[in-house]
Length: 127
Image 1: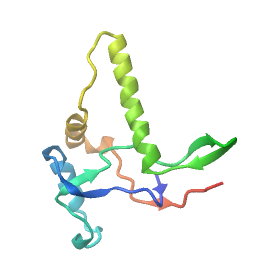
Image 2 (image 1 turned 90 degrees about the horizontal axis):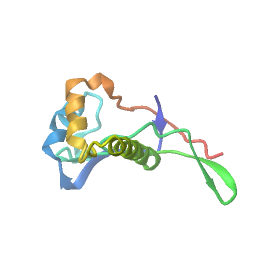
Image 3 (image 1 turned 120 degrees about the horizontal axis):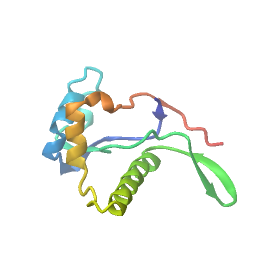
Image 4 (image 1 turned 60 degrees about the vertical axis):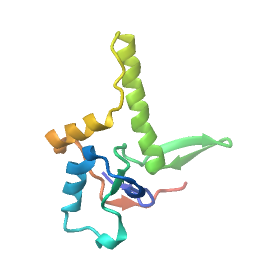
């Protein structure tokens, strides 16, 4: 999979990294292909935690369809998937998932091959 060239992720300069991110962030930081550490705050909270692939989104605005993409399209898509799961759980008489991030990071630590880190990009066609 290929992300869009302007989409981002990184580390916060304002919020500390929560402990449930430690294993995933430390694995990421152990890569040899990272930029110099002076370019990012490795002790900050990593973002986004999870998203979908950020290409191929189409919005309808001002009477026209327009291709869009990036983290701002992909991350809310994953959030809406969690909302749909919660709706199904409520309809079945089950509680909502609640704060899902610690569970997601635990799932990554148990089987990281279930997750894909997008590391290449292409320019988004603006149509």
